[in-house]
Length: 188
Image (tube, rainbow, N blue to C red):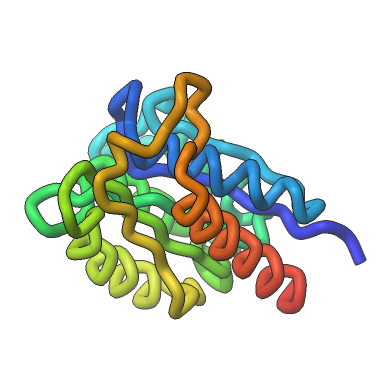
């Protein structure tokens, strides 16, 4: 059986995003299982605000690229920053674009196994936004793992190389990444 293909994505545009750092670590742990992993950074893509008038002119090239990558993936490691108790506009916009289908195509998130992460300097670690992401993804056909991880006080957990320097948190990130790979492998 071939290794599962995993996309790692954080719903942040900020250059030094804590959620991007968490998802980079999750991707690293997923690679250790033998999975094929690609990290996608939203701040490197040109994704306009979703608008059916734009869509009618043709799907923007970076949106199409993202949709194609998501369609070929078996699983998604997804980190969602929490903004005002919910998800970021960048992540919601990305999901909205990716959920749109061209004639004969399958929605990009349909039948994908998703592991949810959040990270925040605050005490809840971004937990409040994860239910919103779960609801959205479940509603468009993703299988969202029951286990999720919200990492509080994240600003204290990385070394100068961007690696988690706290063993308990590293183990939790690793365990969820391994769980995603395991479930994606079984469903592949």
